[in-house]
Image: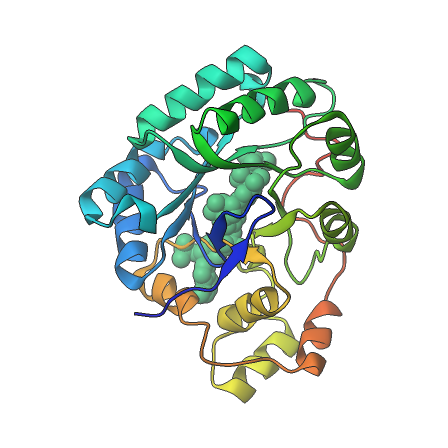
Length: 276
Ligand SMILES: NC(=O)C1=CN([C@@H]2O[C@H](COP(=O)(O)OP(=O)(O)OC[C@H]3O[C@@H](n4cnc5c(N)ncnc54)[C@H](OP(=O)(O)O)[C@@H]3O)[C@@H](O)[C@H]2O)C=CC1
Ligand SMILES: O=C(O)C(=O)[C@@H](O)[C@H](O)C(=O)CO
């Protein structure tokens, strides 16, 4: 079975560079989707309390028979649970739904700057890390100004920043800020939810390599050192998205995909997203 390269996080924990995301997968379909992903070889699963499918993820993990230390499980504290005590309670609830004593990575889902609680929330994540409840802690959707403020005020530097990143939204300022702080960048919506798969340059490169557009876009991420978590509920696509280690894009091909950047977000801007 293909072994996925790992990224060594800033606390020494190794995270698979390719994982499986389950946003918008209903809980009752999640077990089958995650089981299909585990069967193909994925070992890293990305969920969130707000996705409402941690139970489905946990069931697939338990039924797989795969050793716990071969799996890497990420979940996230939702906006309305921010704050020190609420976050500790939210963590316990997520761990229970997942059926796990310890998580691999726990993230603050959005900074929600209007709420003004991400520093208190981070204190809770630092406590969870110190208590061994999670092997690594990180953030999601943090812009450079949020990272600077967090790092300045904290003991622990986030291990990961999970942000929107794909050919239409290359998010270079966040990548630079992550690198400055020693934070690994993880791309959400790495395929732009399918929106970049018909781009002429992506199609042309895919034809040249005898690969699919999705495989080319995932290679573009992987060759630039990013962690990716494509989502699919379609078994053939789950397998296709995992089969990305047998070819290499050239520098010119990477540049041609970079050139598709148009600041085209599929989701909200983190500075403005404060939903409960
Ligand atoms: N931290 C955050 O705020 C966010 C985190 N995320 C995380 O990132 C993960 C991935 O992002 P997501 O928004 O789901 O989008 P993706 O970029 O992974 O795209 C998923 C969409 O692309 C389709 N697709 C998948 N593979 C292929 C393929 N090989 N060919 C053609 N179409 C394909 C899927 O269809 P189908 O399923 O029908 O096969 C689905 O519609 C999420 O699941 C979640 O874990 C996402 C958004 C925000
Ligand atoms: O998928 C996620 O992880 C998200 O946080 C977002 O997609 C968010 O839940 C949303 O729906 C924003 O419109």
